Length: 472
Image (cartoon, one colour):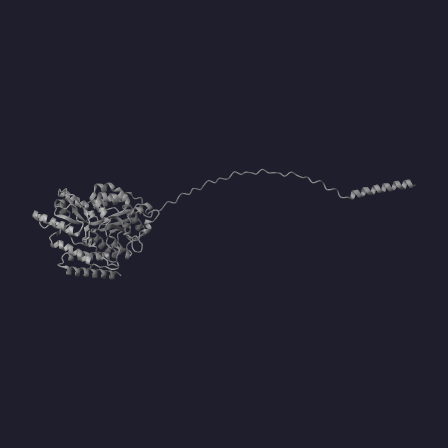
């Protein structure tokens, strides 16, 4: 019985053990470690977009069809021929489609009168040739444009090399006190004395006069020479002196005088230097060593009726023609007016171009024309072939080196132009005062004595300063 019970207990224990085992949670499975999947990078071919080529916008030419009017002073002979040829070439070749109408207006005084009238009427040109003093007056009433922005413009202006080539004195002559560029130099010249070397040497003078005393000696010798010749030569032989403002100023400068007082703030003509210059000229007159002509004196010079005449250096072609017409192969040259202390002087000035204040298109077109007309090649052509003026830039001078070697008189004129001095072109009212100087010069050359000379010079001083008061 005991055996059966023990067996029964064992069976129960086994069954309970199995039952308990069945109730235990199942063991966690071993984790499965998966190898990471390394994906090869996908290299995509770049998408190359075709560039969008934009058609450049068509550049607008603001000058196409613009017509400008150019007033100048060349109405006859080679200068007129040359100016016409240059303007025609510009009209045919300029890339902007600008047309220039060039109109001769007479002498500089005529241009000033016509421009003054045009300012009042509104019927203005676009480019005007004038002396700086006139352009300064017109700038003061807003009739002349400041072209400094055009000169510096990256498209239409001058290159650094072109600016550097312009002689500073020539460029600065066109700059107003406020810095505006109101005048651009086309060429320059100087009022000089024309001297017959060959004839002087025949009379025993081996060199041109260097003082006023030597000058008188030679002029009177020429007068005596022609007195002996008689006939049409009687009363000639010395200096042809026409009492114009320019000729008077030559001698004023030679005697150390000026138009302004020592402070430079007012006109003053009644000075010892001015009196001495007039007394010298009138002494030549009284000594029979000067005479006047009805027109330009180059024919008299070519015919040996004048040992010395007074002329602009631009008159060189006319003197060459006069000597050739007279079949005279004398050697002649330019000299400065000699003062008592050996000072030599000429009256130097530039031929200036100004742009008139009209419309933006016309003022720009005017500058484009001026730039072309005054470039080195065209300036050299104008000087060499047509005018005989002097260059205002080193690049033109370089192009004229052969011309200078072939024309020593012209080369001498270029040297004399550097002596100066120049007229006070930017001083107030100089345009009007200059005319008054011309009127006074004629009276001075007729004056009987020193007292009358002083009275005329005092009146000129008063009149000149009154003109300043009027415009101020």
